[in-house]
Picture 1: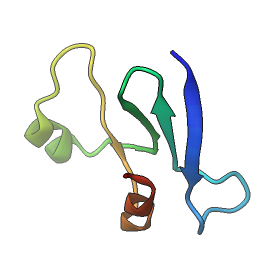
Picture 2 (picture 1 turned 135 degrees about the vertical axis):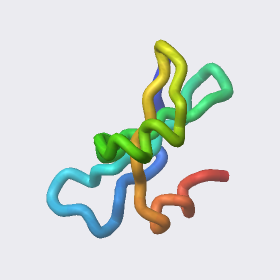
Picture 3 (picture 1 turned 90 degrees about the vertical axis):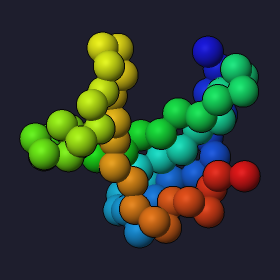
Amino acid sequence: MELTFVGGDPASNPKNSPTIYKTDRDSWVVQGWVIDDPDALATLNLPAGESAVEIPDRMIQFFK
């Protein structure tokens, strides 16, 4: 998988995280904050092999 940097959190200092990448597989990779709230994780009901991260609203500008 090839990742192309699209944008980092403009309010993050100094590492621009969360970050959004476009892949060469017609998909996106989102780097964000780990969700560890048990109630939120139960609501998500994530299947094996999946995870979720949280990003701020200001990151939506990077999605096409």
